[in-house]
Image (cartoon, rainbow, N blue to C red; front, side):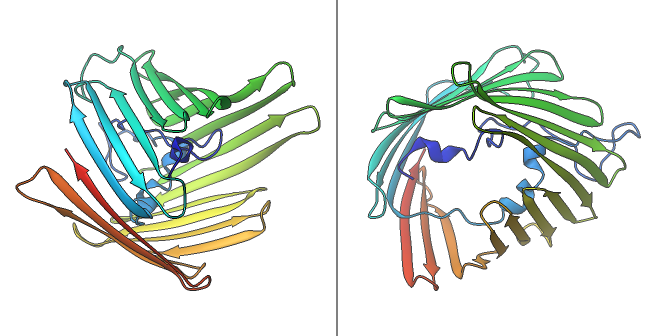
Length: 304
């Protein structure tokens, strides 16, 4: 993708690029107590990780670790669909995700050749309380500025996000998340999105539930804005299956995905091969859109 804005979706639904803290499995207890359910945005993550990431064109990624907590990467992307670009990526993270030094802030930033910037920061205010900030620009214009506070209790997670506050235009987007583990297998919660502007004001409530079996996870989000359901099944260490269904009342669109095939008649696959003994990985991908009669092929090399 030619823009760093592709790293995120919409305010309140940012996919955090920071390494996730270890969370107990869906079936594991700590001293007989219920586990923490994790973040609201991670409910469907197991299923989404099964689907291949679509690639196009030729891509070269060079990674360089400068120290135990600082690393950079350079990405060169040649594309026939989007403008070709160069991206510079920098990360300042903790040297160990299990380190006791949780007070040090973490920063991730990326800028492309057009001047677009995507910056994330995370700060542990306490053992259970974290603060996050996201800033996005498209060339010389601010697109998103977002602030989030998340509290992880023993068996629940609560988060509040404020996105794009504008005093002059009297507009703001507020998002509240809450998840509660009610049993070792069942998690319930919800999301409330509130939007205020000069011309409109309203809110959308979405309820969520997740049930976990011995080797599968079923998740459902449903509300006024639509529905999102997913099913993840782990057959063994090598085979995992994901099924996803999404319906939106705003766009009047419905999609269904099963592995590498979805309801839009798009089928694809990605192959990654480590080029031993070289410190490089070869990535090849192909996606066919039968409805539009289009073929998209991608080739990439990841060094470092």
